[in-house]
Amino acid sequence: MAQLTVERTSSAMPSSSKWALTLRRMTRCKECYLLLTPTFVLILLFNYYPALSALYHSFFQWNGANFKRFTGINNFVLMVHDPTIWLSLGNMVKLTLVALAINLTFPLMAGALIFHLRDLRLAYFYRVLFVVPMVVPGMVTLMIWRFIYNPNIGLLNQILKAIGMGALARPWLGDFKLALYAIMFIGFPWVAGISTLIYLAGFQAIPMELLDAAAIDGASAWKRFWNVELPLVMSQVKLIVILTVIGSFQGFATIMVMTNGGPGTSTMVPGLYLYRNAMYYNKMGYACAIGTMLFIITLILTYLNTRYLKSSVEFTGV
Amino acid sequence: MSRTLRHDLPIHVILGILAILTFYPFVFMVITSFKTSPQFIHNFWGVTWPPTVANYRDAWHRISIYLANSTLVSGASVVGVLAISSISAFVFARFDFPGRELLFFAILSLLMIPGVLTLVPAFLLIKSFGLLNTYWALILPYISGGQIFAIFILRSFIASLPEELFESARLDGASTLRLFTSIVLPLSKPILVTIAIMNILSTWNDYVWPLVTIPDGRRWTISVGIVSFSSQYGGLENWGPMFAGFVIASIPLIILFLFTMRYFIAGLTSGAIKA
Image (cartoon, rainbow over all chains, first blue to last red):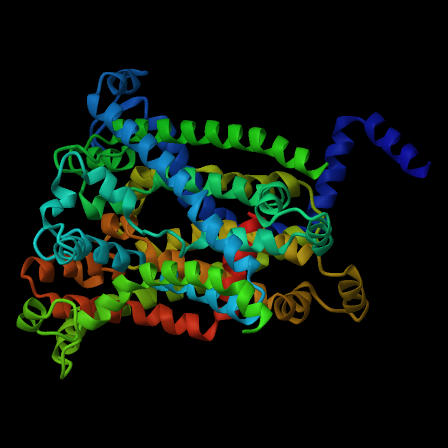
């Protein structure tokens, strides 16, 4: 009741004294703002300013230095007519779909298998084992894959020769048709990574009673996996979907060091094309427009993902 | 055969095959790192004896500078991230002040902004500060970007600490600083270690940003350095030293992993899920 009166008086107060109240509360916690200053100075400078600057400059023809001219939506019109944009978007979609298909199967299987081990000591051993490759610097792993695909002496061609299928040996990364697939294949068998750990943590969070109940009901192992365990790791699946989509939209370092978009432009992706426009051709405005497009697509997909997959979690929660 | 083993055996077979496929390239790397070029050409698959340790001396000559740079950059960044994010998370979790929700949302919404969007203006900003070719070009943005996720994780952890702890300390006349150093920091230690490891891993592996902001090869980090090193030695078909360089480049993080394995795995699973 007292609460109610206070609220009514506060809302009935003239706005000037409401401000005074807020001001008093603010001065009471002066320290708070002071302590938050480093955080906000940094994010305003290194995160907000560049992001807003990128959105703003996507409407300009800009070389990043002395030439800047407002051109409205011209950059976006240019993008629609730029065949490299469409090619790179197509590659991005292909890479994302394949990455999704991989991340929703292989690590899930590995996580489920480790979860079903009865020997918990060995289960822990496998868990540690599949973390180790993540500790190897990402670029070292990629350089090893570059060697695997080496046309002359690479591991893949040598294996093919060793098993008498030398006719299939190819310059994998130098082949217009194959380069993109070679990039998708990097990391095979795709079980050593964060996805396996995330699935495993999801399985381990399932209440024992649920699994026991399903076992008592006499459900087969496959049925239990499909009807009990899988629905209960849907929030992990959702997370992996988000991480994979964001990862393949943004990450162009892999393409850059493996093929640099080549041969020709056959493995070009938008991120790398943005980089080229900015660093090679000095088209900073156009690069910002590509960044803006990627930002908008990411926003839409994240929104769709949260909406669409949330409902399925609620459904399984019933 | 025990019942446990009989149940587990088919799983061991599949996981074993997956492990072999996963690790073979790394095993190949270590074996080849001890071969001279003629040994490698004549004996592609096998182990040769004696091991050519000179490959490591050769590679260390080129790689060590990149490792030193990376250690400096990642080290300074992680210290900055921990210091700034723990203070801010403490304030967000334990104090009530006007604008708290709004300010927190301002930090949280940055998780939605992709790095490719900010790449060009951030580069021009660093350039206008005259920081190109300096370690600051890496450290400052790494602290700024790294603290976002750290504040997010730390805030919910610090908020979950029981209020009685703070209450009794305040009654004893503890200052805000005292609350932070005597209660928050000791209790958050495990989660701080986890955040530190995640942060080191991400700055250590970053490639595009140092490539853009550090044209001078003497200041390259390991990610940029190893690619250039690999192209050079691979181009000369100098495979032994190339693979030795890869092994050397992997050692620091593997040592870190050996000492902090528990936190590593905890961070990669629970930390990521909360996100």
